[in-house]
Image (cartoon, rainbow, N blue to C red; front, side):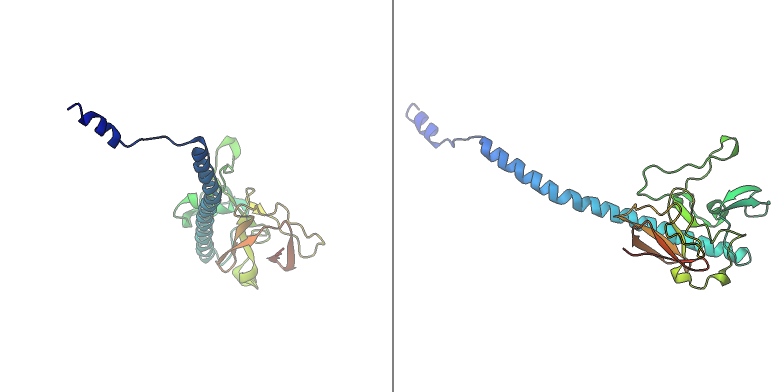
Length: 222
């Protein structure tokens, strides 16, 4: 028994910990991988939010068309007084409140990339819907434009991204080129737009727009 003791000690595997240099190398590798992967994950999350935002706008486009079918083929006004009927109640209503009967869920008025949703305060301090999108003021003015007056639905911006409920594009007869309350660059230095024909497209952000004819506006590409 006394002879076996030293032999067992010789067979033991010697264990040692990591050296400081090895630990630093591992930490450096982890930091490099994190620096590479975090932006990738962030872009993936933002792409998902952008897609959700586009889906919201497409549903709004359907609501606009359904509204127009019920109201003599005219778009809703930006804000105006309405008398009671079977679809909306009497009072002052924003354009998106007029679309409420045609929306499956009012949360489609929220852009997922906007963490601070704008709240609308009505008379008496009552809270209205939260809306992260802006309606083209020239479409929603003068009782709402008719479908027939839209000469180029593919190029007409109907709704864009903004916290102020409407976006005033330049008057075609004016020399101004900058939009009043221009769209927000929420999605990868760009923003989503709903066009008159119902399609949705992301555009790179720019603070200027070009007015062409009537209330048909083309957003400039940088």
